[in-house]
Image (cartoon, rainbow, N blue to C red; front, top):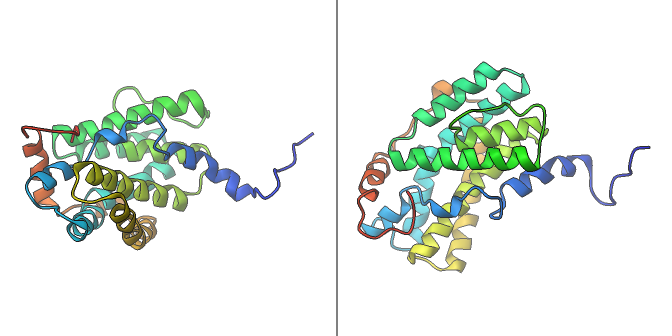
Length: 232
């Protein structure tokens, strides 16, 4: 006999429950250890207050890794949805190759590997593709979302908002802003997240590109920064 749905929980909401767990700060991926060059930006005076943080994160999302990750997530999702292992492998390889520095490569590959290992252990599915070695974070999220029937639009929106929150958390710990200002920054970035998520659904891998050269170069400088709280 099929179990009745819990009162107030619709099938659509049931499909989103895994995503809520995966993107929670308690999920063991280690995102708290990374700032994606933001620590360097704070050290050099690029980010000094709420307004400059909004500008920095907005560029990161619209012109850099945020937009690219959204595209990669969508294509990894569709590859798994189609059962196309080769297509998923190609997307994952591209995602890893796009990291411009050793630190940023570690950021995506360590989080991706940790996420996939935790998900295989706690949220198993026959549709999860076995990956030996490195896996990029957006590719791993896209794979898990497709394997568990999480709507793609929700998966990409949630992933992008989590990126924003991770950067805001790093900024709060780096001391240029407080928690209330951080909350305002997250709210200010919500429309950007929504627009990027919507656009990514129709973009091809050929649309990947970036123009955050100063931040990319900053990731090399961060490797030699005298004091560091973060791994990137």
